[in-house]
Length: 332
Image 1 (tube, rainbow, N blue to C red):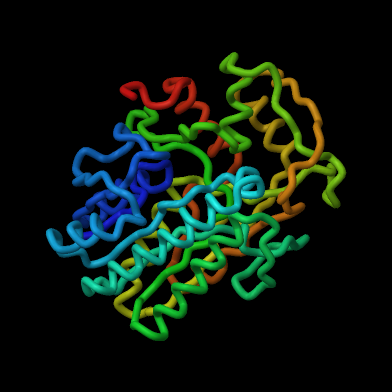
Image 2 (cartoon, rainbow, N blue to C red):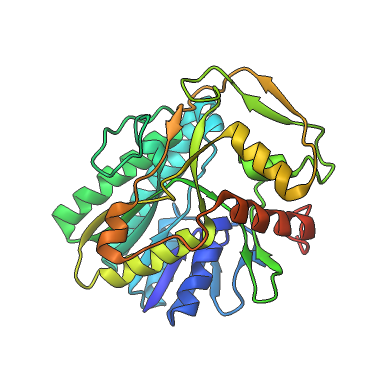
């Protein structure tokens, strides 16, 4: 297939593009580079710079290429920022997605894999399955839920086949056969726990902040499910292949194991051999206490299993990336 990867210069998008290429697909990446990196784009992929909300540019793109499917990653993802600037998130995430979907359907492309999030769920002190209560606690999660709703209506009214993949916490780095890191997290600004924690042994910050230690969890800090970025990527390849037989899919992508903020910091200390001082500060608005996945559905239906299930292996790959790329991608 010829797959259009929207937002494919980003952390997860570029890794997934590499997995599509490895599976024998032709890949075109469409990205405005506001969050992505040219250096992350696989050499074998075609690249077109553009915005997901630019209908005229999308029309040209679809007119000059025959795409069999679209994989949609393009979104702002910082939950904290979304609470401060909700309009920015509603426009970029929701409005631009509607423009993209309309362009797809106008040009006869009716297969979509969508990058959603565990943030659509209400918090629960047990692994979440796809039928659990929805209840975003931040604007970012709400925008993703709104897009999911749009997708289901497009399926009913226009025959759009879809796979909605609800990620839990994406992390880790893509290594080559020699154990060298070739893709990893390079967000500006960085907001994710593992890369922020790794900045301490790199000498880029003095300590790691813990945002609240009074949550109803074992040690009082938030609990999350961490899934390696390559495991996320493999789920996209499986979901697209399954569209020959399945026309409406929604799956959690996670390890099924929750780790608290303090546990993540402890494992990072073990991996790096650094003391990593921490300080506890006030809670951030919009943080759920516990978000852990049950991925039984995608395991049962598509045979997906994480290849990197341990937090130690995930953080070790991230540490390899950040040591070799302490300032992100070198050529930018």
